[in-house]
Length: 191
Image (spheres, helix red, strand yellow):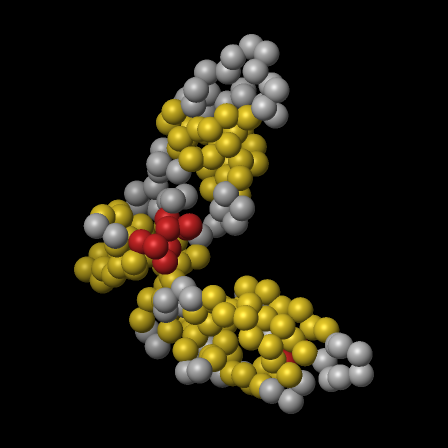
């Protein structure tokens, strides 16, 4: 476990804070007048998903969390839980509360491969690709002259997620989505 000084606590790092793993969402180092520099961070608890704003001062250090990775497959979401199985060991199944992983699971179709972050060999959270390709299940037809609203419409994807897409997108099209922002990026040509 590496010891990080206040200026090494950067976004995407996973640190131990109060004996629990936290992911650094944002970090901003600044100096007010003639005071010592401070790193103002936003941390997300990996276990419960709680977000904290913490200021680390120049004399403070934290340890990097001892995390591991495992490949898993998304199985299903039911009764408030999202279920996964370790790849190559289908008997090792585990779940996360749906509200803690919903922002990622909404972009996954059944049997999608995900990377699971583990802490002390227990699954903590999942990581998915930044861009995913999904099929449009339902998109209202474009009405000629209907570009006053900015030229977009709400489409429902094969996973059940809803996304604003341009008017030329139709049911059955494959589109690419940015999973960080939840926005449409482009239509994928069918092979």
